[in-house]
Every structure is written in C-alpha cells, then in structure tokens.
Image 1 (tube, one colour):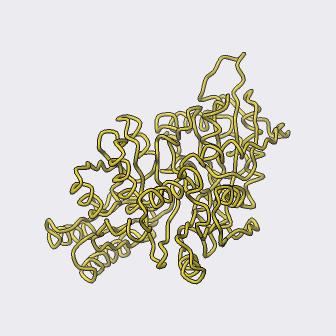
Image 2 (image 1 turned 135 degrees about the vertical axis):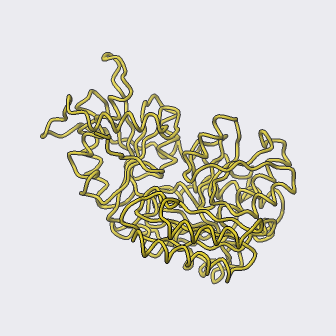
Length: 448
C-alpha cells in the first residue's frame, strides 16, 4: 500500500480538525518528526514550536507536543511568532527541530505544520517521505491520553535584533513613514516593535487578531486597503505580510503593488553593484514573469527557475551558494540572513536600497517591465496528468501554437489546495485571458 502523502509544497496543510490535522494524526506527526532524527537515546531531541494567530493553533501545538514528548523530546514554545523567527531561533540555539503551526495565507479554519532542521532549513523531500512512512507505521504508537510539558519561552528579541541588521546603518530609517498590514497574523507580535525601534513612523492595518480574522480581506493576498492607506496617509511605502510572516508584498508611494519579481530584480541589481551576488545569479520559480528574466539578462545576471515553493528555491540556493532568490508571491530568501523567506527582512532590505540609492520604491521597481500575465485557478475533484486528458491537452496545444516564442504557458496543480493553476504570459492581455479561459473550460468539463 502506498504511504499517504502529508507534505505539500509548504509543509502539511488542511482543515483544522480533519485529517491530517485531526488530534490523533497531529500527535503521530509530532512523534514521527522526532523518530525521523533517530538520535541516540541519551540525547533528547529538542523542539522549538511557534504558531500564528489561528484559534486552532493552541490545541494543535498541544497535540503535536504530546506526540513529540512521548518519543523522548523536550518541547519549548515561543507562542505566536513569524515562521522565519522560528527558523532563525532553531538555527541559533541548541535546538534540533523547529516547528511552525500555520497555514500561511489560507483562511482561519485551515492550519498547517512546517518543520525546520537544526540549520533553520525546511525539511527536504527525503525527510518528509521518512516522516510520512513513520506516521503510517503501526509498530509504534502515541499514548491516547496525557498532556505534554511545554516550556514557554520569550525569544523574540533575539530574532528582532538579527533581522534589524538588514536595515540601513545609523538613522537611515528615522522618520520614514511606512504603512504595515500585519494580516491579523504572526507579525502582530513583532513588526511594530522592529520598525519603530528603527525610527519608522507607522500606519498599522490588520493588527487586531481574533483567532478568526487572519488574512480576512487583509495581508499580502488582499493589498487594496493597504494601497489606499499608503496614498491617504502620505507613506513612502507599504508592506503587507501574510499570516505567518514569511512573505511580503510591497506598495509604492503611489499605491501601486510591487511584487516579488520586482523585489528580486532590485535586490539582485543592488547585490551585483556591491559585488555580493554570488554566481551572478538570482533564483526564481516557474511562476516568475518572463520580464524578470529579460531584465536580469540585460544586466548580465543569470536566472535559474525552480518548481513552485520556496523550499525548492532554498535547495537550489544552498546547492550552489547563491544568495538571492524567491517567488513572485513575495517569498524572498536572502541566504546571508536566513534560508527561508522573511517578510520583515525583505521589507528592510528594500528600504535599505531606497536609502542607499536615494530612489523611491516606485523608481526602483520601474526597472522591471512585466509582460502581461493572467492566472486562472480551476477547482478539481482529482489530480490527473493534464497531458493525458485529450480535451485539455488539445486546448493547451492550441494556446502554445498561438503564443509561439512571444509568451509562456504554465499549467500546474497547487501544492496546498485542490486547484489547477493556468498561467499565461504574452504580448496582449485580452488574448492571453481568452486562451486561459479556453483551457479552463476544458478542465471544468473534464476534471471539475
């Protein structure tokens, strides 16, 4: 029997209370991640756990800790903290594993589990398969009752001090007016302290979490309110985080969105000018706009594309020693800081470029000329190889022929939701939208 897959592109994710995030399975996952390390018995495994603001986070933390402790682990909790904070503290302290309980940008009724190694890196696919096999292995069990001892610790200052290093030297940010949308998520415990400590004057949105309003019409997936606030309040930029704080979407002073592609370009050019762009290469994913690839090439910078998911970006960066990489969605990895995305670090790195160059975010972002792009998501009942579905394959072939060498078609399944994503780039927005809908209609009639 094939082992059930638990991990997607960004950890384990689902509806809180339903498999695989039902209490017994969460406890088994906690035990399995400990058993996967296979340390000698005299060396207790140390886990550091953090979470976002979802109402399900506390009970998932308790169940996960119960399973981990049943297998000999010691568990500390930092409470509500951004994912990159847990990743950093896992690396900087004597900790074997970091676990984040979050579903990132998903609505509050979802949740998830992300695991970091002692180096602050997300689990590799090989380790994920080992954990899945252990969860399925009936030769061991977690006691059905009992409560694990969890030590509560406050380590946020260590993480904030490390992140602050990415900002400009001295008083470079003093008086800068910045709007922050905290998505009613994990950055509500950290962002205000960090940016105010550096001298910024803040306008805050999404800073009153209730357990049920995380990502609700706010944050990186809903930047409209932030854009309006930036213009109305005369801010120099705005920053919208997602629920767990590992990515950021920026807004320039005119209220225009600056996505991850623009950030990768402006940071890549800045690193190149400073002689810090290892391999003269930026790592992105298959979702990044072809305009980014062209702009980097014009400056003599290579771009390597990976599969979607910041863990794949990270793996490529680690393998080759590259220092700048990320996703269009706002995950940006600066390897000198962390091996995972960090929304606050991204914002500070961009603000540093603004200060050191004397240019506004709008001026810096104008270096990217993005090709028109459209993305259509179709909910599907099952994941089938679309090349084997005649109606879908034929529609894709027609679109590729129409695009020729002047565009790009990418069709892929979401790693976290039952969606087929159809992305097209080309010279004309109306045409590519029509072509995307042609493929989507074929999918709806066969797979929806």
